[in-house]
Amino acid sequence: VLSSSPSALLLGFCYFLAGQGSVAMYYSALFTNFNNFHAEHRGRIVGLLASAYGLSAAFIGLLFETFFGPQRLIPFLYCLAALLGSAALSGALLLRKRPLVAPAQPTSPVDKAL
Image 1 (cartoon, rainbow, N blue to C red):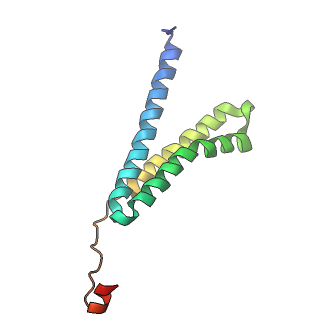
Image 2 (image 1 turned 90 degrees about the horizontal axis):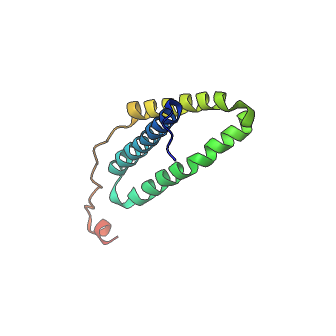
Image 3 (image 1 turned 45 degrees about the horizontal axis):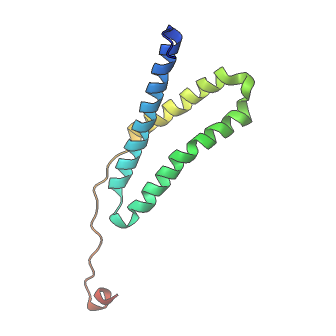
């Protein structure tokens, strides 16, 4: 049953914004780093970023249980907003696409044979 109370609608909108922000941060990091590495390393980079994104919920849960606990949910949410907001801001400022440098071509016959 859908509720039309303002608090339920606001909560749904906040979940929508959190989901969109999470996906935007993930895709921007993924595509930027995907383009910054040569083809032979792209699988490792995508795997590393995907595993970090997947394990982020475990780290956030560990942070909550270690430093806050169930009695301090509101301070935890403020801390989480500050941490994730600063991560998004630093990603927006620091992630840059680098020009790819072609790998060195072997010049001697010995190097070509290897």
